[in-house]
Length: 141
Image (cartoon, rainbow, N blue to C red; front, side, top):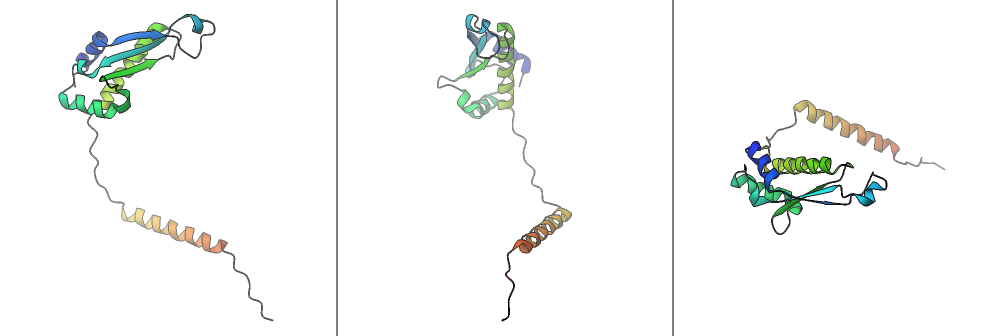
């Protein structure tokens, strides 16, 4: 994965649109379009190998539209530019995380001490519950 090439392709190929955001801003919210929405086609992303691109397509799932575009929006601040930069950072982070090969899991076994602790806890729990059981006393008449 070539991060510099990926960043450059996001800057050049992502189309930005702005709309009115919810959240802080008072009357400004009703007048200024500060929410930034970025769209970029997966095929326009440079810096990813074909395998990474396919992993990203599978991992992002419902974030990818039917046309093969990733859609990301940001409306955390009252500044249009800050939201645009935030959306770019979010898009970059999403693509990098999605394209990354998951770490292979190594099989492990619990240690002997851990097994013994678990069994001891089970015995204690069983004992505690057995003591709670209602046992009517026998009366001999």
